Image 1: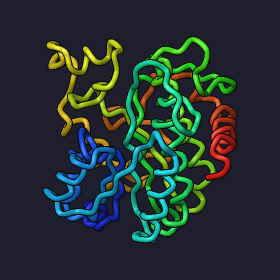
Image 2 (image 1 turned 90 degrees about the vertical axis):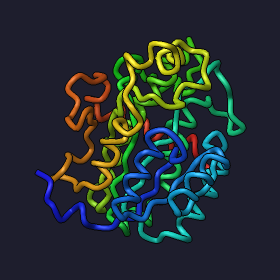
Image 3 (image 1 turned 180 degrees about the vertical axis):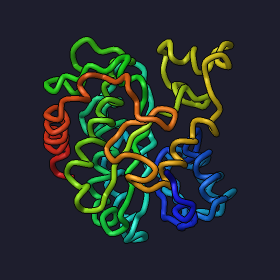
Length: 283
């Protein structure tokens, strides 16, 4: 049961992917409710315009380049020694297999490695703020995800939906392991599926999901950005063990019951963390 007072607390909230879609919708609502919101976006134009509209700080970072993520973390730590919410919301499905300047498959890097790195680098401020770390995951983790710990870069049998499903599954496994490792330090982790949202998501891919999100039948399958942002806002304003269960994955404000079976194996989550650390050696 959610207490009335918990929603009256002003929080410092960082939202990546905050210039568009559910990130922007959540930013608007959270600012209106009196929170201190900081948005991070890839597009200077979109991010700057929304920040001006809401009169809030903004930062630009492309998660396809880990040096930018590292610089973002450094800048945020200087400005915000205590962070109450980190919403790792940036991500998306890509087209053909692309290798980034960091020599990682782009879908895996943008959706998993970059937020993993950002979270790790921001940990002092997250611990100081007793933060909730929110991962925007997806039902694609169950439908398409089959994580191979020996092929995290999707070198074998690459397909956009497979790479995306694996990355979203990695988000959920990261949530579980983050809770396991840092829950005793006051950090809470939680993940959610926002629904099929009518936004710019999938606009950069030639995959069939582009037709679902942007085709003539999209109204039959999609929800508004405001509806998609509902759980992000709920989790950001909520309190663990009162509003939601730490380490859990939610769909429509309920713990998901139909999930990828790999989510039930804590050893996979632990191994993914260790392999992610190795891939990020030097940052």
